[in-house]
Length: 72
Image (cartoon, rainbow, N blue to C red):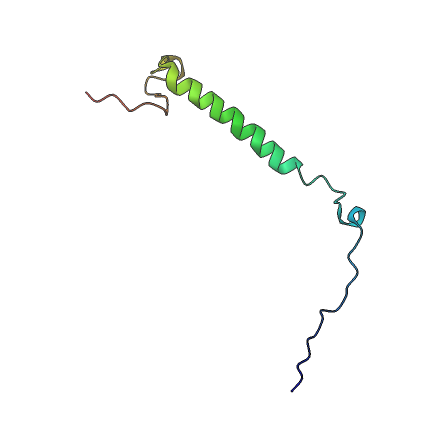
């Protein structure tokens, strides 16, 4: 008994230049990366600075979000 194998149909692949996007898809991810990196640097600096624990010029009860509240 003979067996036959089938080949996949040959399809033309588009040229590489046809696959390149023309829009600015990278603007959103780049903006997020820059803003998130800036926040991470600022948050790290503020967390290890240990100054301005209570900022009374913004109100007597304002507390930096990087510290625990003082218990009396």
